[in-house]
Image (cartoon, rainbow, N blue to C red; front, side, top):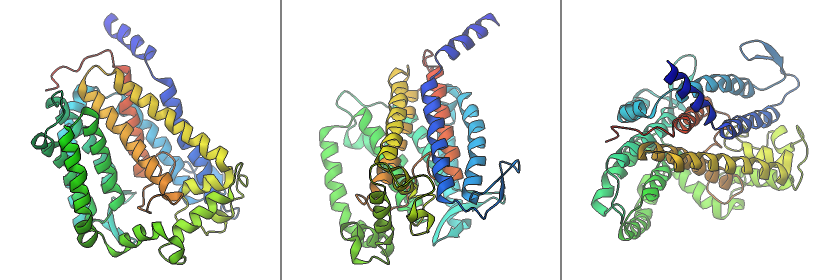
Length: 388
């Protein structure tokens, strides 16, 4: 009993409070922007399980409720020891693959894409869960079969790549190009983190370039090709494929240095900006808070990534380190793609800004990831035995 009390005190002393506070501050700021994005003074919604009346949008009300649920999920994830996570990594991965197959067979179609399972009370997006499953499965494989000093050879890298390619293929069938690319990007970053041979890296680049033409012709849908072409000339179709980018650029540019003010964004308030609560919520932030607001939020993301990578660097075992690195990569890829998308540097691929955009499945899964990181941080003085 005394040993347990001592261990609990040690865990509390090593708790990463800056990581937790930053991880909470970002979605709270996101709620503020989300409130403005859907603000309607004629609304009078009962939110937070009916406790409060507010002139807010349904998206804001649901996101606030999901944030409370996310805190419970984060606490649960913090309690999971790395030894348990290591054991169930492949099980979670396999369960995610099964859910993706069920989506293709029985999923709910929204805007031409079959990405959700209707569970009655809410819709589940298995691709969000698959991101976690792929990270954990890849972390377990790398911890059991780490590369040599020269990195993975061509034959050695095929199996860890297949862990990523299987869910990518299933998600592409939905179709959801953005999420598939995110999983591929996260997997690539994790593999590159432990190292590959130079010839493998060069071969990978050559194969990617060579595969671009057949992928463009046979894998991408017409609307996806239009999105890529629109990136180079959005004004060519201002009322069609270029509408999203043009309206987003107008919103971002009109915010200038200090923004138009809270609840004063014309692009969002007058409904010119599409998907303003999800994919383009950063545009709402830019319009109302300007460069100052955008820079502040991006600094928070950078600090959050720094704290997560700090946990990875201090982990005593390779599995925990790779899992945390994968979570950092997930947040990084989402932030880079989303911000690049809303300012017109990357094609519109439907990638939300993690912790900031509206989305219950995304918020809950991200807080689960943050809980895993905090759990690893609290136990970083412990060594994961039996990792192989």
